[in-house]
Length: 258
Image 1 (tube, rainbow, N blue to C red):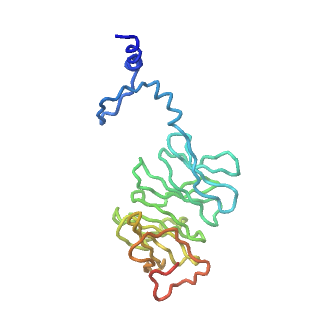
Image 2: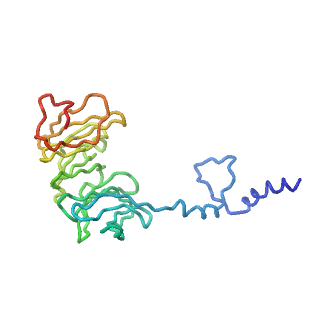
């Protein structure tokens, strides 16, 4: 065997002599050389990175809520000034989801959190300066897509409370969690509130069946009656009410611009 051949096989021999990473038992490994533990340790500081994401702006101050982690999972933090330090607000063993300030309430916001990664998100109210956290939902259903009315009096959200499957539209005054009521019963898992009317009497609700297939409905908050706004085929989103909204649609309501 020549010197050149020995040099070609030497690195692989060294790999065999080092402690290697054991692959998961559910994987079948074939023709893959051992991965040394030292290499994984060297790469760890590239893999274990930290990121921060904006959750919401404070309605009255130059501060924001962000999501970042200093432990195992992301938590909610407050940044009180431009370039300021973050202050951690939640300390759960599970990761927290989105958080939105309540309009008109300067230090109150609603956030979501599941347990064990099960994605059965619950909604919580955070109150400052006491830092008190109150569970708003039942603890079992899946609750998503929160949307505040413009005056901050009501919170619209999607919930599977009725049967564990369909995402009905619910309303709640977060100061009184028992006030929660279903405003629209639906079939399917892609329904959510998209926009509140300025007077708080109507909600545009989206039924998103796929990326390329969705419909918009105008829903009466008091009665739950809904009116189709869009054509039968197409994809719609990013809905906003016009500033001159008069509180009703013309008689040929479907396909009218909200």
